[in-house]
Length: 280
Image 1: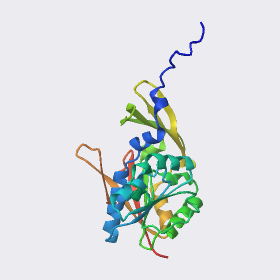
Image 2: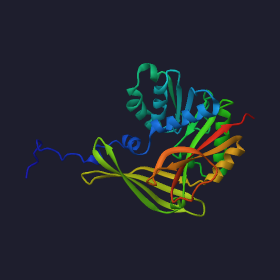
Image 3: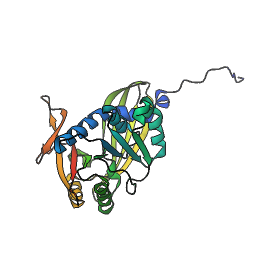
């Protein structure tokens, strides 16, 4: 049969049409809740509003955008080593802001271990991004750099997860809505080494047409425990408080975090770490 140039090509699958960064923001990140927590907690602890936020490992700068939208006095600095993801953020997130709002965001393509910025009120390192530092010296150096970078009354915000299910290989699924329709978000803990706590995780997406976006994101981390992180923060000069998530009447996480010194040994948990700078 002769090739017909007019013959229509097969329609791309939903996976081929999908934007992995958009799916990440829909499935993993809730910038509104994150900004609610850091701004409300800073106000409660310091008795005044924070105005300058620095987001380390900022990725698509979604949190920076949400921050400047909250108040015309708010400014944000985003730091990330990946220029491509910063470019995506400029094209897809900053582009939705007004010119005035964009003028209050500065994105920097640099290493968080060495970058120099204006001193922020709040420095945020969320989505367990600091776990890419796998040894105590490097993570401790990062925490020391953060302490130096903050204003004297600044606060460092991190998140962390744990529980006995975090030490095993497993998959978790949940449904999300996307421009491609309903999508199954799949979190895979692909391997875990109990000797050094090396942890490899992947994010996959499964679409309604049965196509898949495998390993849309992959992470090679150390699974740090909460006591280890607390001790390293304290060594760097911070006063540390753990904010633990509560539970609703159905036994599901309620999204509200409160200071805690004891907690149940749950199978899986997520907590915020609030590290207040103690001036050196």
